[in-house]
Image (cartoon, rainbow, N blue to C red; front, side, top):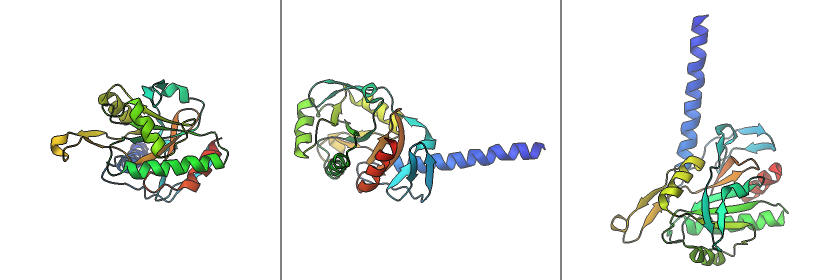
Length: 228
């Protein structure tokens, strides 16, 4: 009897550690690298089935939630993650001087926004800048306009400082955010950040993430509609 009781927790702990490791590897992708989940299973929960593929991963059992975060949007208006409660939205991490991944991610997100609008969804988008020293509201506004972002439902936000954003990204998206000074990155400040798109439900729970470099746009639309 004692033997059966002692073995089960070990198996469960091992499974949980394996699952956590798999998710962590997926999220901790830097600006110069991509990571793809390799699960082919589906998870059943509120809002229907969300399918895991090479470009998307279900996070419902991970129980990740968006943390409180105060920032300023592209119009110079205060932004708070609390204002997103009760909404379905997508999030990513970007910076306007990014020379590699963001020029791919942002037009991809623009395509996602276009398809969401065509599908008649009310989903919104928040792009969190990780470079507050450069990405002032007016800079974010020009960046948004470059990609024809509809700012009625897409918010570009910047925080008072890098450490604030770093803490938020880690606690919300369980992702590392690092800063490389100009002397080690070819004369410009560069940031290593996640390249994932995150889907958040009305309760502020992150339910799924997608490869922001090759997002499954039709699937994202389906997943959003399943949550509505």
